[in-house]
Image (cartoon, rainbow, N blue to C red; front, side, top):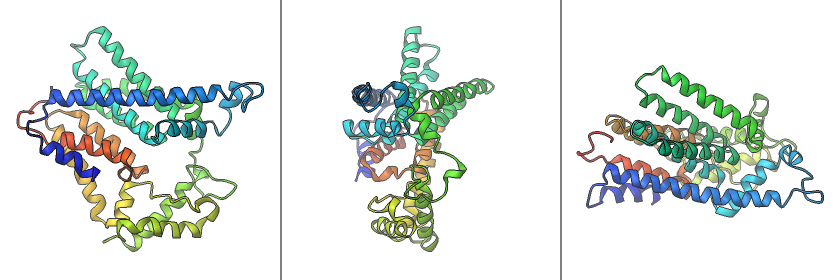
Length: 336
């Protein structure tokens, strides 16, 4: 229902949603995102400060930052306080970064110095929050889609080189400096792709078994699928044969929306999803609305590692933005 609600609502709106109205809706989304994420982060900071001291869980800040469980504490506390998984909050922040960046690139010549500083600070703050939340794919997806947005806007493509240098520098610094991000990225390695065991299990190698079982379902039912309601049951049966200690009673989904649709609906599932993304991007690219193409890139990467369309926090922003820009009125011949 969520997937249909926003497109139908936008399609049936009695008066066209103009470019100006869409801009207002985008800013409201950004302000809402910053409000909820900053509130959650304030709660996280208070929880951390309450656990540092001579007689506390961590004796010092250095001990806390070197604790492998630090990232888990940050992410778990955040989710408990605002009821939004850090991955989805990071997707919200990624969308906000693209909206703000698109605004700066389109209006650069007419923005005042104070307005530019406000936008720059907001983008920087969003990136820092992304680093602290330590969701790997949304973070990298934001960097890549932001770079694509730069490239589409810049008339002199040589300037994209400076954008690449800046984005790579920011990415590396956040990974090295932010403790929660550092610990999450340390899990990524070729040696950590073996199936998890009771003694060696983390968020990265768990996906090895998840993707193995997902591909087994698809290989046997690639044309018609097994039905969306049967995917989780069959996955759990497969997990039990791999590592009972790691997967028992966990109900891990496919962690890839395209695999989930393929397993449940057959080959037409992922093809239909790709067609929706491609059509929305192409239609808006034709009228120089590059924001939509960058959002599609962000969603595309997020869909590769998360079942984005099986949670309300994922499907609502996806349906909202795709629906908002899927229907273009004849008057919108140029993105102003």
